[in-house]
Amino acid sequence: MAQSRATALLFSGQVWLLMSISGLKAVVALAALTLSPIVISAAWAWDDEAQAAKDEGMRLWGIHQWIKMQPYLEQAAEHGDVESMYYLGEANRLLSRGLSLAALDWYHRAAQQGEPHAMLRLYDGSACELGDVCPEDGNDWREAALEATMPKAEAGDADAMGALYDIYNYLDQYDEAMEWLLLSAEAGNQDSMNWLGQLARDDEKNYATDPERLEAAAEWYRRAAEAGYAPAMNNLASALNHLGHPEEAWEWMTKASDAGHINGRGWIAACHITPDEEGRGLCQGAPEPEPAKGWAIFLAIHEEVPGTSSERSLRVYRDSVTPEQREEGGRMMEEWLNREPPLSYFPDKFGF
Image (tube, rainbow, N blue to C red; front, side, top):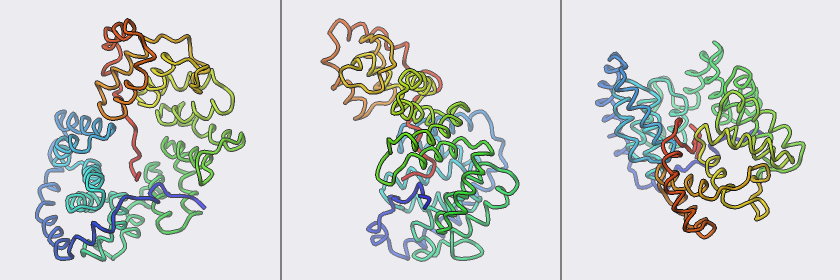
């Protein structure tokens, strides 16, 4: 049975218990009042300033800065950008650990512009049943998502085909879901290719390590990786390492780092500090360690994406680097700071 990327969504029942039906209906009224400027502004020229705001908002989304990203995406949403509306819904949902009023408002705006994943979020939150936030022509947001997406998919839109995978999973039609995921991948959707790799490797408990599954996964990862998809580069490196191809695994991890993947960048840093004989599995194919370089990379990651993860890396590896190497690394940090493309966790559009 195909699995959905949203089987463990963070919509909390407790949040909904705290929200009164009258409160939800108030949001509907609010949406009606606030939607008009959004729709009207869609006619505004999409200028360089709006694009720059969206780019910065999405950069911050990529490093889980859910508060800081919102003013930038709000600016893009005011110009009618539906994707920005959806991600504003995501940010508010994640911050509140459930479907807050703000998240509901943004999802509803995006849904009214045909965004299928926003519709699925509204379905998850029982927005129609509990708050009368329903599709125009029915009461099932899953069916509304299907109706909005199918014509685009049938016209050859690879992204729409990929969205049908999630929609059909929500409709418990798993064969249809897989058919559309395969069609999406064949049509060039890199995320669908990568997800097929994930499904091939997943043994329903954790990532499998048996060669047959890994080989099947690597085929899909490679297709997406060769098309330039950073998450697939990272996944391909892991699969190749388990298959006993350390040199090629290192090549793809390096490419993932160059493409801005934080995990790839972190492995590059770690392998320059701790050689493979000390237990760094993915470092088997790495060059000779340069501890000062590794320290410089960790410093740059912490500067660009500060947080508990980067703090932990500095703490864990500090004693493996001499004071002189740390000093040299400090001088080298600028070489690794704010490269293009920017660092990102590459979170799924329709994740948890």
